[in-house]
Image (cartoon, rainbow, N blue to C red; front, side, top):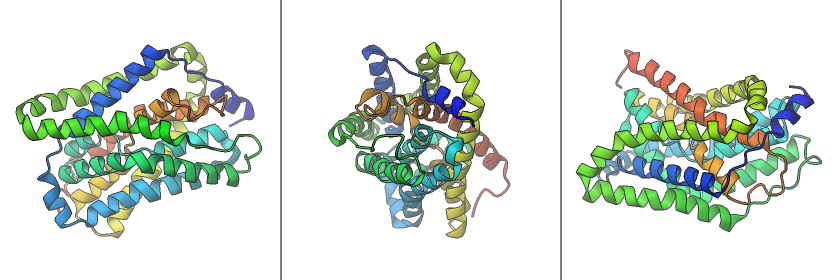
Length: 316
């Protein structure tokens, strides 16, 4: 990628008014509420009786994915801009994506494990998302010979904590309570909210970039390749760890899907709704990486789930 292309990507701006940002936040909160509707306390009992797969899932999502993403960004070198590298790390620092449970169901994976991993990574995101982004983001900036080009990465902890707690913590709690005490309502809302969340996210991405659509379309082939490689890394981490640890094949599928689908909607909300990148103008590279991730992991998740679904190796 030429410096001109990188500069063009970084110059892309997303200007949302308060109403647009509130819409993204409301949609994301509803998405997490929808995820929590599938969570029942009794689901965790069997999973935690045999915690091996849960621990492996946390290893993949909270440690290996951010660390190896940092390494991948460094390997890309000057082919990507520093802002694109930070975008990759931000996505990797986010918890598992809301559609992973749907994909696990489609792929005949361990749905109870999928829901458990989504819930745990989301709950831990209040602490782990800002920590991982700060740790690996600064390591990337200091290692990738770009330190002179960008400011030091400082995390506005209270701002980020408050945003994650409101967008993830509260809806998750309300969803679990609804699932526990209003099971008929929860069952009626669960699937519609999953599909609505997908449609809304794609619509919000298109609306956000509408004023820069021409610049985005000119750069999308580079963005596509970066996100494709990054997503293959994430999927590969989950499948490889599950294979090396010799967990049941259904659990291996879940680890693959959970690690390969990230809550990039949270990344967008943190970028657009907090002071996280006040010192980083312009940072269009981060925005387009995060936004395209949200679209691409739907495609890759459906592809992987379909392959798993068609596989004859369904058990064991």
